[in-house]
Length: 317
Ligand code: NAD
Image (tube, rainbow, N blue to C red; front, side, top):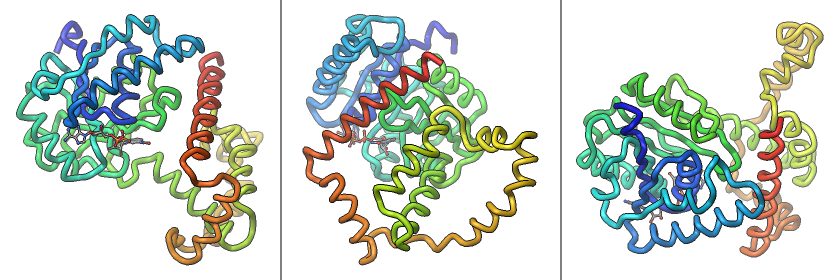
């Protein structure tokens, strides 16, 4: 497909993630057609996006080269799926995280698009082999897993189906880079992909430390936000260890490998996150931040403001 044909992207599903993807793609100059099977939902998404783009422009945080009005002019909604797909070279699916719903959406999509059109899923917890099991030509299918909120957190995990063509991974990698995301490739599918596997390890050990009475909920969160997290916004665990010994990674492991192995072998079993023992942890968290809508929304807004400032800092360095 020539690049002159690669201008239109269809976003299927216009919830939180569909709206975010749309904003990211129009910021890169692509035309985006949004389809949602709930009548009126896609139109509402456009209204919401308009509001957000205007706020971002006001805060000098709009992404890309185009003004908010120019980006909005690239955006449209269609209540008809076939119409929404017309002319698209790339489809980003963002419907509910339910296997049967996704499988049927991809069956519909395959019927309605040409064989070269890339079919990409936003799924966070399902593996490509399951999501695309009802698609005939799976070489053009992959998962492009974003991190919430994708407008500020740029990572996208590209996860292939066993049959995904290398060119499909390459085209998607180039597209994500062009729109300012930070794509990474997984060479094979795996449950949880990379980000959620690492996150699960962190959650599990944090949970165990609180459950075993070693540390409070408040303090384990500070271990991340004031400790590990300070570095991790800029360098990952591999570079961290490479820089933490005079002669780099090998030296680090000679010095500290035995200690790390000892600690790792003392880790407890997978916690029961919903059992009786979890109640006191949940209560401790809710004392810090009550779990009513208002409090949670206020903290989410604070998180997004801080992420916005961090995204700006990263852009400037
Ligand atoms: P959401 O519930 O906010 O939105 C889903 C949208 O899909 C709704 O507007 C719904 O009307 C629409 N929809 C449902 N079935 C449809 C169909 N058959 N055809 C067209 N539209 C349909 O969900 P979300 O949080 O935006 O998540 C979407 C996807 O993104 C999920 O797979 C989720 O796992 C993934 N994801 C979510 C996050 C997150 O933090 N929310 C992060 C990364 C990935």
